[in-house]
Length: 342
Image 1 (tube, rainbow, N blue to C red):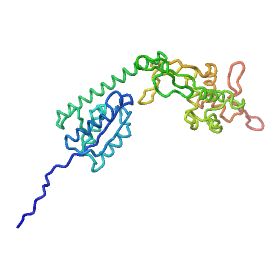
Image 2: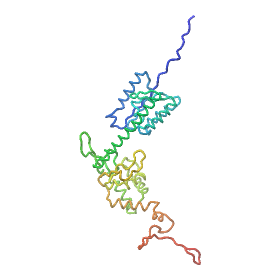
Image 3: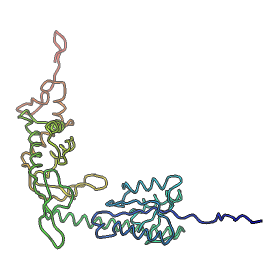
Image 4: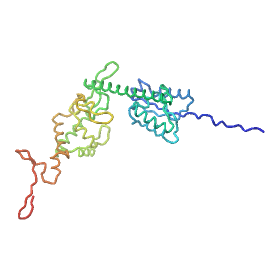
């Protein structure tokens, strides 16, 4: 009697991998390790190991110093599902995954609890304590190098701004970027006034000072409504909002003094004034106009005494002031035969 063949249940399952491909900037994609090059190397590694490529997550133009990366978050969500569709996240180097040692370990441990590990094709390590320590040391050096690079890059950009050149960000509304000079293979740029958009800037200042048809100064909300009602669009053809109008009315750029390095890139917090670099640009409005608008806006601010009096119930409050001492008109009450009077 023929014996039935026994099925071998000890055949190891094929490792399923997700490829994570990342470059920080478009320039890095051209000059450093490009996305296609990473894909080629990672795919070849999987073929050598006999792994199957289940997913691919491409992150062009995002830094690895934080986790605010759309494809990264999509990949993490998939890796933490039960069961995960892959058991390995494959990267060219650990710095492609993260350049922050604490955050790298945070995600590595989170993934490990769900049976997913991070593998680098250029920094192959095991899962033993010595390998984990080596990975942590590598990540610490990656973080240090990232911070040093950022420091040197910022220093170069500040010097570029001191020399009057633009650093490549999108220009403020009212301006456009033009080539200024060429140094080797690099073209230096500056800002010049965009005539069409600059007229919108001047209109906003005029409305803030005298209003429409000399009806009186208008606030930022009224200016935004006025522009939208008359189809005066933003640079992108959109509608004006309060924040956009407020920026135009308060940015010293429009008097020819653009402040570079004003905020912390990650948090948006303002830096100390001595860290700013003032870049000279062509002015769109005069100093006198700008200062007059700042005074007008200060008087309208809800926290100022005159503004509060103006909004109060007292007739002419915040409008009439003593010609001798400058004191504001105030309310007094008294009592007569007819009772209390104001």
